[in-house]
Image 1 (cartoon, helix red, strand yellow):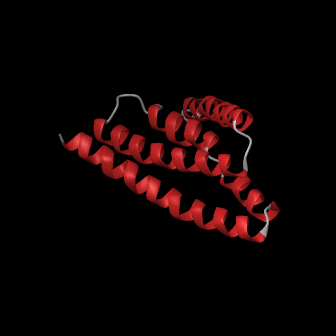
Image 2 (cartoon, rainbow, N blue to C red):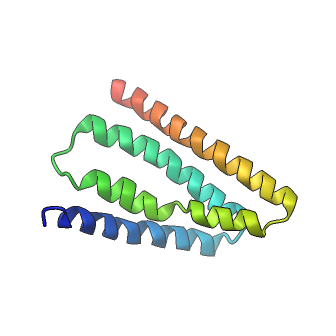
Image 3 (cartoon, rainbow, N blue to C red):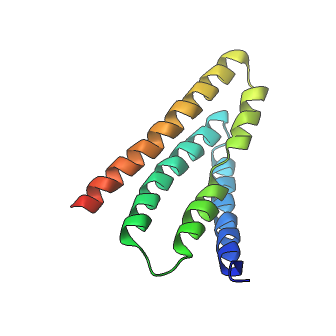
Length: 120
């Protein structure tokens, strides 16, 4: 029973993130939209994980709400894989490579920048 607030925080955050993703996909309908969403989401996961962990907030709900909830609902690697399967071979290869490399670099860059900010 004590995990119910965490589950609610993740669920509410997931709704917020999914709505943001849907809004962007509607405004910018392209096979590269999901790529951009995943890259920005990974960057923000890197930033927020450092900031939340370093600041050690009083509430145990902040990290699950933002990282698992909002950014988990915002990013969508399952849709990225569907886009790869549906694309032409050249676009599929570009999407696959760009997604993997960019997502990893985005997390690394977000983490590195946040570490510098926190160190100051």
